[in-house]
Image (cartoon, rainbow, N blue to C red; front, top):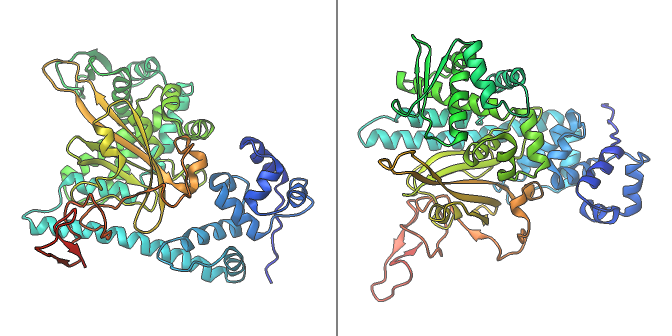
Length: 467
């Protein structure tokens, strides 16, 4: 018989309660226990039960990971996450899950693995569907589509490069390497001479001469990122080349695009080192403006970095991130949540990011619910990137960052939202092509897998009814 591991976490529970500004009565209500029971837990007079551990994981998903849970607690947390999938009409309650995870450990692990395989197979089928559609249209998938999907399947986190960039950042010192430190390393350690001129694009490197040219018309954050990109391309070339080699992409153009993408990834990891950035993000409750100030990065760079915090032993909040242009095209996208972006056409018009494109420099917040019943808190902001010249129009787009509502306490933009009110959430879909909602006033065209009926004598918001 396997002995049960007794978990005493009194000090961590006290600290967690203090961090959240909760008294014992409020914490007890959150965990559905009495104040006296909580007091016993905090004084280590009683251990945590599996059911309480699950309630802690549900109420404080990131903090619970850091209490020091062992393999059995980690297994139970993974089972709880799989069990919450809308695929299951009647999920098991906490007590049943805890008993199942304890008594059927091997079966639990296989169920978790099976669910993960199911989730990933669905994503791969979407990618195959896209590839087949592209082939039917007269050509294979474009290199940038192949690279985009590679990053998605990698979870938007590349451990070897992330850790190498973090180690390089520690050499350069400070919370985030300063522009001067990056310039000095390029010059002294890598024998690169710097030229600031707008005659060669945003960034141009002459490998034979060792000349790096940066357009001075870019914002300071962009100039610093271009320097970090070139530093990563030179100092971490072996680590990046190893990842490209192992990616098994189909074309030379795809491999070259992946190399560029990994250099950008490394630049973000260099300017926002994982451990420091994650800790600061949690302290500031993912306030992007304050994080940008702390690390000297742009709003978009900071949002993108938040979506990469998926290190196995130190995960961040699972975010989705995307960038949308003025025409509604999704030009960047990644999701560590259950929300998956449209693979054809634009996203749902009810999503706040489309409004944000037209309103630069203003943060919009939305509580949204997808057809599977999952709720998300998202933040969107319209941005204008200056061109540095009257002859070139500035780039206008919007970025969006969001998480599932269960992480709302970690996300400052969720403050004040009625997270559980039935009518508070905007009912969005992924795209009209696959959205099952029959009563949407913003539908552009019917779903591809449903029949429609047309009554010439009746006209609603759309000229058809969905069967």
